[in-house]
Image (cartoon, rainbow, N blue to C red; front, side, top):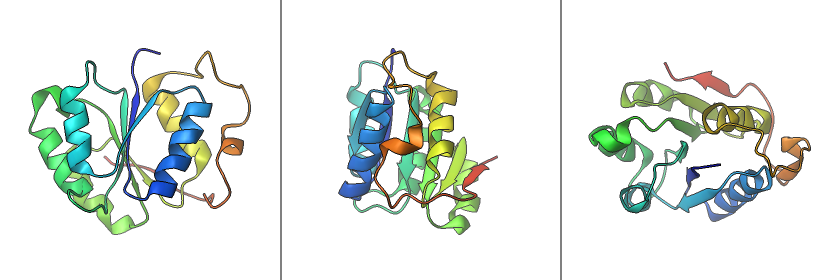
Length: 150
């Protein structure tokens, strides 16, 4: 796998759980706690991520401002971004900001892994080959959560 998944999430428990699940599925992951950290990571990375998983409600720089700044930079604008949010009303605001997909929290893990595989390839060679939903701890609910942002 040539590139990584950038996970931008302010909640440390959610961030670590998602990071662990992605790593166990074989995906390299870099994390940021807010939009400002994510932009700094993107600007210093040798190669772009294959996908950005983005929370919206974060301190320092929220997901909306991150998306605006990402879209204003040609080198970053083409990176697909999946918004992870518990608030369906946010969908109307992120659609014009270049979002590829919106996943509702609590996340459906099958939907999340389907999205990651769709942009990053997979299943990765070093995957355990098991059910992806079994890798993350309880508390990540299931349900109708996957919705195209366009």
